[in-house]
Length: 337
Image (cartoon, rainbow, N blue to C red; front, side):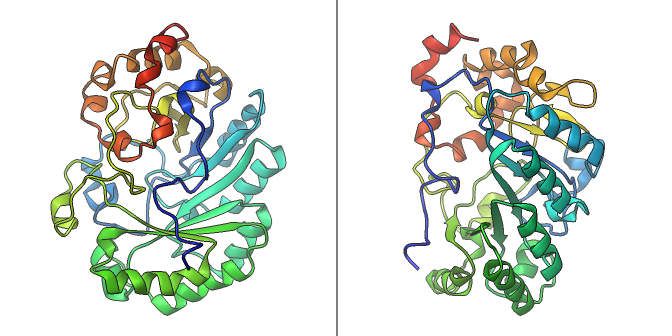
């Protein structure tokens, strides 16, 4: 089991020292946010609070296929493939009826080195699993919410047949072909060392890599102190010590495309700025345009310079890796943006 367990590193593997390669003509990552909705209401997630308290996320629930294909086609304008196209966001990607077709289309256009899905996995059926595998999916990232049906109910508000769920993951893993499976759980879903051991024993045989991630206080209006069961918040999601950094690196290497076509510069649940819309602009021009560049230039003066949303955001610090820290490169970067 030890050779599958990972901590302190990103599931994508070794990271590039970001400050040494900026500016990027091609983003490392584009996150497609295909569904603003979820079949779970996990206590640590935005879906745990009433939708009226979410703020503006998206004016549509599902991304249209025509819009999606436009996005993928325009990604070919970049001078090289993305490192990753990731299906994630504030919702469950498997709710989209065309998710396998989305992956297949992106794969056929050769726009990314890796195509990943982040999912709770509860909607997996044998047919859907085979469709995802055959579409060319590179990695399935499954978020587990407990090692018992009772814990799933407590954390996610759903009744789950845990034995059937485990069987569906086993089916995917046995038939995975070239698709890699990464399984993770947040530490607050495990009550003690015995449950940690049980998690590894239950799900270790169903994946290529496995991890216990750390709860991070990233959504306002959620009582993370209660959820943490007395654990502190001194580590990042991946298990590294919190690092001091005054610049959020996300807008420098990624962007997210929401179901309504809006492009935002990060994974935050509150957006500091909408930088364009792919309904009437192309992705290449948005990434390399004045609006995005201006936002990055302001960010080089620190998150405080970008307004209240960035100033109050803790997401970037809890998702930070040493290779992402840009503070030592500020002088050089200011001359480039």
